[in-house]
Length: 400
Image (tube, rainbow, N blue to C red):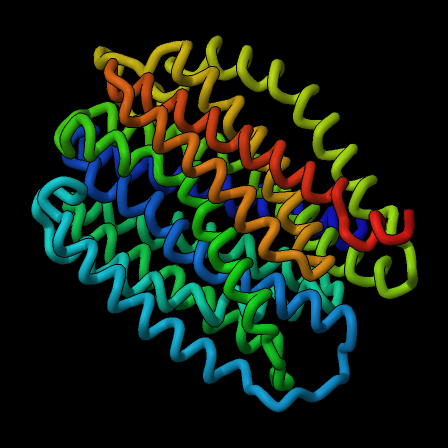
Protein backbone atom coordinates (compact mmCIF):
# COMPACT_ATOMS: atom_id res chain seq x y z
CA UNK A 1 0.00 0.00 0.00
CA UNK A 2 1.40 3.41 -1.01
CA UNK A 3 1.46 6.61 1.00
CA UNK A 4 -1.92 7.74 -0.36
CA UNK A 5 -3.46 4.37 0.51
CA UNK A 6 -2.24 4.51 4.09
CA UNK A 7 -3.53 8.06 4.57
CA UNK A 8 -6.89 7.12 3.03
CA UNK A 9 -7.21 4.17 5.40
CA UNK A 10 -6.34 6.33 8.41
CA UNK A 11 -8.79 9.04 7.35
CA UNK A 12 -11.57 6.50 6.80
CA UNK A 13 -10.95 5.11 10.27
CA UNK A 14 -11.04 8.59 11.75
CA UNK A 15 -14.21 9.56 9.91
CA UNK A 16 -16.05 6.39 10.87
CA UNK A 17 -15.01 6.66 14.52
CA UNK A 18 -16.00 10.33 14.63
CA UNK A 19 -19.43 9.62 13.14
CA UNK A 20 -20.04 6.77 15.58
CA UNK A 21 -19.01 8.99 18.50
CA UNK A 22 -21.50 11.69 17.52
CA UNK A 23 -24.20 9.06 16.99
CA UNK A 24 -23.56 7.59 20.45
CA UNK A 25 -23.72 11.07 22.00
CA UNK A 26 -26.96 11.87 20.17
CA UNK A 27 -28.61 8.62 21.23
CA UNK A 28 -27.49 9.13 24.82
CA UNK A 29 -28.51 12.78 25.12
CA UNK A 30 -31.51 12.80 22.77
CA UNK A 31 -31.80 14.66 19.46
CA UNK A 32 -33.01 17.91 21.03
CA UNK A 33 -30.56 17.98 23.95
CA UNK A 34 -27.64 17.03 21.70
CA UNK A 35 -28.18 19.99 19.35
CA UNK A 36 -25.63 22.32 21.05
CA UNK A 37 -23.00 19.58 21.00
CA UNK A 38 -23.80 18.76 17.36
CA UNK A 39 -23.38 22.39 16.31
CA UNK A 40 -20.11 22.67 18.25
CA UNK A 41 -18.91 19.41 16.69
CA UNK A 42 -19.24 20.79 13.15
CA UNK A 43 -17.99 24.26 14.05
CA UNK A 44 -14.90 22.64 15.56
CA UNK A 45 -13.84 21.61 12.07
CA UNK A 46 -14.17 25.20 10.85
CA UNK A 47 -12.12 26.71 13.68
CA UNK A 48 -9.70 23.75 13.63
CA UNK A 49 -8.87 22.32 10.19
CA UNK A 50 -10.39 25.39 8.55
CA UNK A 51 -7.95 27.68 10.32
CA UNK A 52 -4.91 25.42 10.37
CA UNK A 53 -5.05 23.55 7.07
CA UNK A 54 -3.28 26.50 5.44
CA UNK A 55 -0.30 26.06 7.77
CA UNK A 56 -0.37 22.32 7.10
CA UNK A 57 -0.32 22.90 3.32
CA UNK A 58 2.50 25.44 3.54
CA UNK A 59 4.63 23.22 5.77
CA UNK A 60 4.00 20.32 3.40
CA UNK A 61 4.95 22.39 0.35
CA UNK A 62 8.14 23.76 1.90
CA UNK A 63 9.16 20.34 3.22
CA UNK A 64 8.68 18.75 -0.21
CA UNK A 65 10.42 21.58 -2.07
CA UNK A 66 13.42 21.91 0.24
CA UNK A 67 13.42 19.44 3.16
CA UNK A 68 16.71 20.56 4.67
CA UNK A 69 16.48 24.32 4.12
CA UNK A 70 16.70 26.52 7.20
CA UNK A 71 14.67 29.73 7.34
CA UNK A 72 14.86 32.90 9.44
CA UNK A 73 11.28 32.78 10.78
CA UNK A 74 10.46 30.09 13.33
CA UNK A 75 7.12 28.38 12.90
CA UNK A 76 6.37 27.95 16.65
CA UNK A 77 6.00 31.69 17.01
CA UNK A 78 3.40 31.76 14.28
CA UNK A 79 1.50 28.84 15.82
CA UNK A 80 1.38 30.38 19.30
CA UNK A 81 0.33 33.78 18.01
CA UNK A 82 -2.38 32.41 15.72
CA UNK A 83 -3.69 30.04 18.40
CA UNK A 84 -4.03 32.87 20.93
CA UNK A 85 -5.86 35.13 18.49
CA UNK A 86 -8.14 32.34 17.25
CA UNK A 87 -9.06 31.22 20.76
CA UNK A 88 -9.93 34.76 21.80
CA UNK A 89 -12.06 35.49 18.72
CA UNK A 90 -13.91 32.16 18.89
CA UNK A 91 -14.60 32.58 22.61
CA UNK A 92 -16.03 36.06 22.13
CA UNK A 93 -18.19 35.06 19.16
CA UNK A 94 -19.35 31.83 20.78
CA UNK A 95 -20.38 33.51 24.02
CA UNK A 96 -22.20 36.25 22.11
CA UNK A 97 -24.19 33.68 20.09
CA UNK A 98 -24.57 31.04 22.80
CA UNK A 99 -28.33 31.55 23.11
CA UNK A 100 -28.92 30.86 19.41
CA UNK A 101 -26.28 28.20 18.78
CA UNK A 102 -25.60 26.46 22.11
CA UNK A 103 -28.91 26.75 23.98
CA UNK A 104 -27.37 29.25 26.41
CA UNK A 105 -24.40 27.09 27.43
CA UNK A 106 -21.20 28.89 28.44
CA UNK A 107 -19.00 25.78 28.58
CA UNK A 108 -19.61 24.69 24.96
CA UNK A 109 -18.33 27.91 23.30
CA UNK A 110 -15.31 27.92 25.63
CA UNK A 111 -14.55 24.35 24.59
CA UNK A 112 -14.81 25.46 20.96
CA UNK A 113 -12.31 28.21 21.75
CA UNK A 114 -9.87 25.66 23.18
CA UNK A 115 -10.21 23.54 20.03
CA UNK A 116 -9.27 26.52 17.87
CA UNK A 117 -5.83 26.47 19.47
CA UNK A 118 -5.43 22.73 20.04
CA UNK A 119 -5.69 21.88 16.35
CA UNK A 120 -2.64 24.04 15.50
CA UNK A 121 0.20 21.73 16.58
CA UNK A 122 -1.68 18.77 15.12
CA UNK A 123 -1.89 20.24 11.62
CA UNK A 124 1.68 21.47 11.69
CA UNK A 125 2.86 17.94 12.39
CA UNK A 126 0.57 16.54 9.68
CA UNK A 127 2.07 18.95 7.17
CA UNK A 128 5.57 17.80 8.05
CA UNK A 129 4.61 14.13 7.68
CA UNK A 130 2.90 14.79 4.33
CA UNK A 131 5.88 16.71 2.97
CA UNK A 132 8.23 13.89 3.97
CA UNK A 133 5.79 11.39 2.40
CA UNK A 134 5.56 9.39 5.64
CA UNK A 135 2.18 7.92 4.80
CA UNK A 136 2.00 5.30 7.53
CA UNK A 137 2.84 7.77 10.30
CA UNK A 138 0.34 10.31 8.95
CA UNK A 139 -2.34 7.62 8.72
CA UNK A 140 -1.72 6.54 12.30
CA UNK A 141 -2.04 10.09 13.57
CA UNK A 142 -5.20 10.86 11.59
CA UNK A 143 -6.83 7.61 12.75
CA UNK A 144 -5.85 8.23 16.38
CA UNK A 145 -7.77 11.51 16.52
CA UNK A 146 -11.00 9.83 15.46
CA UNK A 147 -10.50 6.88 17.78
CA UNK A 148 -9.82 9.20 20.70
CA UNK A 149 -13.04 11.05 19.91
CA UNK A 150 -14.92 7.76 19.94
CA UNK A 151 -13.45 6.61 23.24
CA UNK A 152 -13.57 9.90 25.15
CA UNK A 153 -16.63 11.63 23.70
CA UNK A 154 -18.75 8.50 23.38
CA UNK A 155 -17.76 7.31 26.83
CA UNK A 156 -18.40 10.68 28.44
CA UNK A 157 -21.83 10.97 26.82
CA UNK A 158 -22.83 7.59 28.20
CA UNK A 159 -21.67 8.49 31.70
CA UNK A 160 -22.57 12.15 32.26
CA UNK A 161 -25.46 12.52 29.75
CA UNK A 162 -24.85 16.23 29.48
CA UNK A 163 -23.79 18.31 26.44
CA UNK A 164 -21.19 20.55 28.12
CA UNK A 165 -19.17 17.71 29.66
CA UNK A 166 -19.31 15.75 26.41
CA UNK A 167 -18.04 18.77 24.48
CA UNK A 168 -15.13 19.11 26.94
CA UNK A 169 -14.16 15.50 26.17
CA UNK A 170 -13.89 16.49 22.50
CA UNK A 171 -11.23 19.10 23.33
CA UNK A 172 -9.29 16.58 25.41
CA UNK A 173 -9.31 14.10 22.52
CA UNK A 174 -7.86 16.63 20.07
CA UNK A 175 -5.22 17.78 22.57
CA UNK A 176 -4.07 14.20 23.20
CA UNK A 177 -3.87 13.52 19.45
CA UNK A 178 -1.78 16.66 18.96
CA UNK A 179 0.63 15.69 21.75
CA UNK A 180 1.08 12.19 20.40
CA UNK A 181 1.66 13.35 16.82
CA UNK A 182 4.17 15.97 17.92
CA UNK A 183 6.20 13.23 19.61
CA UNK A 184 5.92 11.08 16.48
CA UNK A 185 7.31 13.78 14.19
CA UNK A 186 10.31 14.63 16.35
CA UNK A 187 12.29 17.89 16.15
CA UNK A 188 10.73 20.41 13.78
CA UNK A 189 13.11 22.47 11.63
CA UNK A 190 12.48 26.20 11.20
CA UNK A 191 10.20 27.35 8.40
CA UNK A 192 9.61 30.69 6.74
CA UNK A 193 5.91 30.98 5.97
CA UNK A 194 5.21 33.04 2.85
CA UNK A 195 2.94 35.59 4.51
CA UNK A 196 0.69 36.54 1.54
CA UNK A 197 0.41 32.89 0.51
CA UNK A 198 -0.37 31.76 4.06
CA UNK A 199 -2.96 34.47 4.58
CA UNK A 200 -4.72 33.55 1.33
CA UNK A 201 -4.68 29.84 2.16
CA UNK A 202 -6.09 30.58 5.61
CA UNK A 203 -9.01 32.42 4.06
CA UNK A 204 -9.53 29.55 1.62
CA UNK A 205 -9.38 26.98 4.43
CA UNK A 206 -11.86 28.78 6.67
CA UNK A 207 -14.30 29.45 3.85
CA UNK A 208 -14.06 25.92 2.47
CA UNK A 209 -14.87 24.31 5.81
CA UNK A 210 -17.61 26.84 6.52
CA UNK A 211 -19.25 26.04 3.17
CA UNK A 212 -19.90 22.46 4.30
CA UNK A 213 -19.64 22.29 8.09
CA UNK A 214 -21.40 25.60 8.69
CA UNK A 215 -24.74 24.13 7.57
CA UNK A 216 -25.90 22.96 11.05
CA UNK A 217 -25.03 26.31 12.61
CA UNK A 218 -26.89 28.20 9.87
CA UNK A 219 -29.91 25.97 10.37
CA UNK A 220 -29.79 26.56 14.13
CA UNK A 221 -29.73 30.32 13.55
CA UNK A 222 -32.71 30.11 11.18
CA UNK A 223 -34.83 27.50 12.98
CA UNK A 224 -33.65 27.80 16.59
CA UNK A 225 -31.33 25.57 18.65
CA UNK A 226 -34.12 23.37 20.02
CA UNK A 227 -35.21 22.02 16.62
CA UNK A 228 -34.40 18.25 16.71
CA UNK A 229 -33.44 18.38 13.04
CA UNK A 230 -30.31 20.35 14.03
CA UNK A 231 -28.56 17.33 15.51
CA UNK A 232 -29.75 15.14 12.62
CA UNK A 233 -28.39 17.59 10.06
CA UNK A 234 -25.08 17.72 11.94
CA UNK A 235 -24.88 13.95 11.98
CA UNK A 236 -25.74 13.83 8.27
CA UNK A 237 -22.89 16.25 7.55
CA UNK A 238 -20.47 14.22 9.67
CA UNK A 239 -21.59 11.02 7.94
CA UNK A 240 -21.12 12.61 4.52
CA UNK A 241 -17.69 13.81 5.55
CA UNK A 242 -16.63 10.45 7.02
CA UNK A 243 -15.85 8.66 3.72
CA UNK A 244 -14.83 12.00 2.26
CA UNK A 245 -12.04 12.21 4.83
CA UNK A 246 -10.28 9.51 2.84
CA UNK A 247 -9.81 12.24 0.27
CA UNK A 248 -7.21 13.73 2.61
CA UNK A 249 -4.85 11.19 1.05
CA UNK A 250 -5.36 12.84 -2.32
CA UNK A 251 -4.96 16.36 -0.92
CA UNK A 252 -1.84 15.39 1.03
CA UNK A 253 -0.36 13.99 -2.20
CA UNK A 254 -1.43 16.84 -4.50
CA UNK A 255 0.45 19.65 -2.74
CA UNK A 256 3.98 18.15 -2.82
CA UNK A 257 3.32 16.57 -6.24
CA UNK A 258 2.35 19.88 -7.85
CA UNK A 259 5.19 21.75 -6.14
CA UNK A 260 7.74 19.16 -7.29
CA UNK A 261 6.34 19.02 -10.84
CA UNK A 262 6.43 22.79 -11.30
CA UNK A 263 9.95 22.94 -9.92
CA UNK A 264 10.92 20.39 -12.60
CA UNK A 265 9.31 22.47 -15.35
CA UNK A 266 6.15 20.39 -15.82
CA UNK A 267 3.60 23.18 -16.17
CA UNK A 268 0.77 20.97 -17.44
CA UNK A 269 0.09 19.43 -14.03
CA UNK A 270 -2.42 22.08 -12.80
CA UNK A 271 -4.54 21.65 -15.92
CA UNK A 272 -4.46 17.87 -15.61
CA UNK A 273 -5.62 18.19 -12.01
CA UNK A 274 -8.53 20.42 -13.05
CA UNK A 275 -9.68 17.92 -15.67
CA UNK A 276 -9.54 15.02 -13.21
CA UNK A 277 -11.41 16.98 -10.54
CA UNK A 278 -14.25 18.05 -12.82
CA UNK A 279 -14.75 14.65 -14.45
CA UNK A 280 -14.71 12.89 -11.07
CA UNK A 281 -17.25 15.30 -9.59
CA UNK A 282 -19.66 14.84 -12.50
CA UNK A 283 -19.58 11.06 -12.15
CA UNK A 284 -19.86 10.98 -8.35
CA UNK A 285 -22.62 13.58 -7.93
CA UNK A 286 -25.43 11.51 -9.39
CA UNK A 287 -24.48 8.37 -7.52
CA UNK A 288 -24.13 10.16 -4.19
CA UNK A 289 -27.43 12.04 -4.54
CA UNK A 290 -29.43 8.89 -5.33
CA UNK A 291 -27.84 6.95 -2.47
CA UNK A 292 -28.42 9.73 0.07
CA UNK A 293 -32.05 10.19 -0.96
CA UNK A 294 -32.74 6.45 -0.76
CA UNK A 295 -31.15 5.50 2.56
CA UNK A 296 -30.31 8.78 4.30
CA UNK A 297 -33.28 9.11 6.63
CA UNK A 298 -33.41 5.42 7.67
CA UNK A 299 -29.72 5.55 8.56
CA UNK A 300 -30.19 8.74 10.59
CA UNK A 301 -33.14 7.25 12.48
CA UNK A 302 -31.10 4.16 13.24
CA UNK A 303 -28.12 6.13 14.53
CA UNK A 304 -30.05 8.67 16.59
CA UNK A 305 -32.56 6.20 18.00
CA UNK A 306 -35.36 8.58 17.00
CA UNK A 307 -37.48 6.00 15.20
CA UNK A 308 -40.67 8.06 15.23
CA UNK A 309 -39.11 11.46 14.61
CA UNK A 310 -39.31 13.39 11.36
CA UNK A 311 -36.47 12.96 8.90
CA UNK A 312 -34.59 15.49 6.81
CA UNK A 313 -36.22 14.43 3.54
CA UNK A 314 -34.90 13.01 0.28
CA UNK A 315 -34.43 16.43 -1.34
CA UNK A 316 -32.20 18.04 1.31
CA UNK A 317 -30.19 14.81 1.68
CA UNK A 318 -29.59 14.61 -2.08
CA UNK A 319 -28.45 18.24 -2.08
CA UNK A 320 -26.16 17.52 0.85
CA UNK A 321 -24.56 14.62 -1.02
CA UNK A 322 -24.11 16.73 -4.17
CA UNK A 323 -22.57 19.53 -2.14
CA UNK A 324 -20.18 17.12 -0.45
CA UNK A 325 -18.93 15.83 -3.81
CA UNK A 326 -18.45 19.39 -5.08
CA UNK A 327 -16.67 20.27 -1.84
CA UNK A 328 -14.18 17.45 -2.31
CA UNK A 329 -13.43 18.53 -5.85
CA UNK A 330 -12.99 22.16 -4.87
CA UNK A 331 -10.70 21.23 -1.96
CA UNK A 332 -8.53 19.17 -4.33
CA UNK A 333 -8.32 22.04 -6.81
CA UNK A 334 -7.46 24.41 -3.96
CA UNK A 335 -4.66 22.08 -2.89
CA UNK A 336 -3.26 22.17 -6.43
CA UNK A 337 -3.41 25.97 -6.35
CA UNK A 338 -1.61 25.91 -2.99
CA UNK A 339 1.10 23.65 -4.41
CA UNK A 340 1.65 26.13 -7.23
CA UNK A 341 1.79 29.05 -4.75
CA UNK A 342 -1.51 30.52 -5.94
CA UNK A 343 -3.32 30.64 -2.63
CA UNK A 344 -5.07 33.90 -3.51
CA UNK A 345 -6.87 32.23 -6.42
CA UNK A 346 -8.11 29.49 -4.07
CA UNK A 347 -9.34 32.10 -1.58
CA UNK A 348 -11.28 33.98 -4.27
CA UNK A 349 -12.88 30.74 -5.49
CA UNK A 350 -14.20 29.95 -2.01
CA UNK A 351 -15.24 33.55 -1.43
CA UNK A 352 -17.40 33.30 -4.54
CA UNK A 353 -18.94 30.10 -3.24
CA UNK A 354 -19.75 31.63 0.14
CA UNK A 355 -21.30 34.67 -1.57
CA UNK A 356 -23.62 32.43 -3.60
CA UNK A 357 -24.54 30.43 -0.49
CA UNK A 358 -25.30 33.61 1.45
CA UNK A 359 -27.55 34.85 -1.36
CA UNK A 360 -29.55 31.60 -1.19
CA UNK A 361 -29.91 31.77 2.60
CA UNK A 362 -31.71 35.11 2.52
CA UNK A 363 -34.45 33.73 0.25
CA UNK A 364 -37.78 32.84 1.89
CA UNK A 365 -38.82 29.26 2.50
CA UNK A 366 -38.18 26.27 4.72
CA UNK A 367 -34.91 26.74 6.65
CA UNK A 368 -33.70 23.20 6.00
CA UNK A 369 -34.22 23.42 2.24
CA UNK A 370 -32.56 26.86 2.11
CA UNK A 371 -29.51 25.54 3.96
CA UNK A 372 -29.26 22.47 1.72
CA UNK A 373 -29.56 24.49 -1.50
CA UNK A 374 -27.03 27.03 -0.19
CA UNK A 375 -24.56 24.26 0.61
CA UNK A 376 -24.83 22.65 -2.84
CA UNK A 377 -24.76 25.95 -4.74
CA UNK A 378 -21.84 27.36 -2.76
CA UNK A 379 -19.57 24.34 -3.07
CA UNK A 380 -20.37 23.92 -6.77
CA UNK A 381 -19.48 27.55 -7.40
CA UNK A 382 -16.17 27.08 -5.57
CA UNK A 383 -15.44 23.94 -7.60
CA UNK A 384 -15.98 25.64 -10.95
CA UNK A 385 -14.06 28.77 -9.95
CA UNK A 386 -11.03 26.86 -8.63
CA UNK A 387 -10.93 24.61 -11.70
CA UNK A 388 -11.03 27.65 -13.98
CA UNK A 389 -8.19 29.17 -11.97
CA UNK A 390 -6.09 26.05 -12.56
CA UNK A 391 -6.74 26.23 -16.30
CA UNK A 392 -5.86 29.91 -16.41
CA UNK A 393 -2.39 29.55 -14.93
CA UNK A 394 -0.39 32.74 -15.60
CA UNK A 395 2.71 30.65 -16.17
CA UNK A 396 0.99 28.57 -18.85
CA UNK A 397 -0.41 31.66 -20.56
CA UNK A 398 3.05 33.19 -20.73
CA UNK A 399 4.41 30.03 -22.35
CA UNK A 400 1.68 30.13 -24.96
